[in-house]
Image 1 (spheres, rainbow, N blue to C red):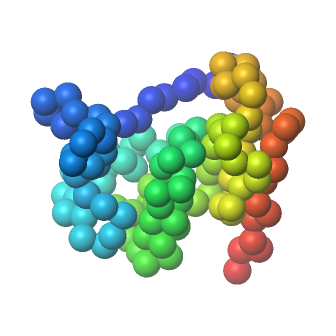
Image 2 (image 1 turned 90 degrees about the vertical axis):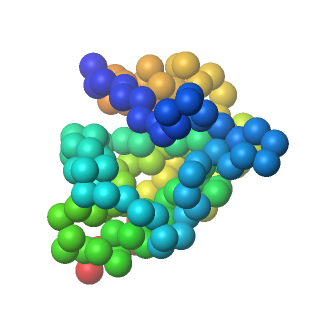
Length: 140
């Protein structure tokens, strides 16, 4: 059975989500993220062994997939951005009862019983029923 790894950002004081005038993350999806080399190494370590990303609808809609796809194109030979290419190459699954189809390349939308879907993914099966996926474009 596959492992399920939770990867999330949290501030030192435990802030993890949007509330009032606080954004849910400390940087937006632009190019001005001041990541240091240690943080990039950490992300490379986390993403080196993944094959599937389970992603919230809100994160997908707010730009996660577009941002890292653009970073992979912008820094194709930069070893500190290898994780961006892994995000592009990995299978992405977005659980949502609101979305009926994926707007993102290589991404499948699933709906219904989320615990069951996660269990199927861990077994190496899920994200094949009750879903619609955007086709992957051919690689050049």
